[in-house]
Length: 211
Image 1 (tube, helix red, strand yellow):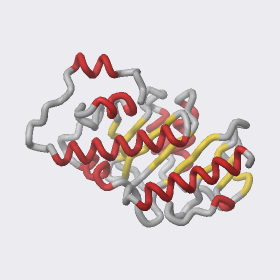
Image 2 (cartoon, rainbow, N blue to C red):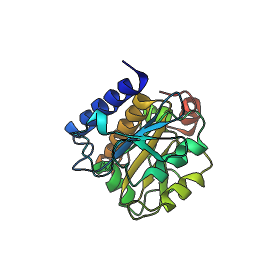
Image 3 (cartoon, rainbow, N blue to C red):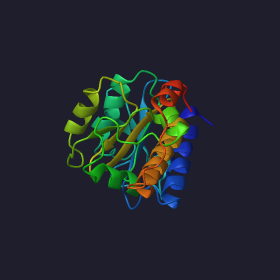
């Protein structure tokens, strides 16, 4: 099996797993992953993670122009910004997962550090998550906002919209995305209960260790 065929199958498998577990719904969410030749595979616009066809996944060149397959998600600029600013990015996952979206709408959520430091793996896999403003779906300004972070964040929350995570490969990005959603759920479950948080010293010891 070629690299492209294998990655297409992996994208469909990961997407269906996320869909089946309710981490995204309907035709929401998109995934991209880079091939070794610098081209990128992206889930098509209007497609459902539960019913992706490997043969119809969009294949884009290094400039993110369509080479083959269905038209790509309208949020390509969001993906492109991560590849352009974070060296070593091999995949980007964007979902509309419920708990992350809920957290993004709360006025007390810190725009510079949207996830409270509750668990070690959130720190290791995500670092500090930036909360970005509300953008209309497909607005190229989303990509501009990510570029403005200069590669310093691997994960962002789009307010009233959903999380976006970049990783070294498809599985790293999807695992980190799941960690973000689980952490957002914990933050909501413990809201107002004054949970014990990781200390600044513990956070410093975990930062940069990776998952």
